[in-house]
Length: 193
Image (spheres, one colour):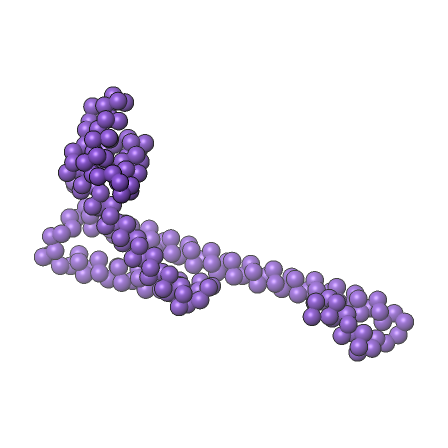
């Protein structure tokens, strides 16, 4: 299994500073390396980072960022196409993406010629797919429960409004029959129509 890079072994606060420097377009990777090594020396840490380690880390973070931007763009496109409340449809889309990932991974596991991913990397990806699948199941369940809860709230509101309307009609009808005009007036008052 590959050991973590010197950048990934930095204390969290110093790693955050490096990330901030790398995001700043005014700071070169060389400047970021020099500044981080100065911070490490100032705080008494014996380790130092090399320019090549910072460059590899920066490239990897840019690749991750690009993948995130692409997935956000795809999600925005589909959400725009599916509408503002696409719980069920978006859930189907995410499930389809997971199926595709699982299929691709199983094909890769069967292909002995693929050397790009080590056994440990494959196991990690499989574990991530499993966790992602469980997360999707939980999200779908939560979305379904939210829909049921909203329906119950609407049902209770309708029942309360009907009860209030019935009370108004009873109050007006005590002296006898209620006219259709008065019934329409009560409905308009009650529902703001």
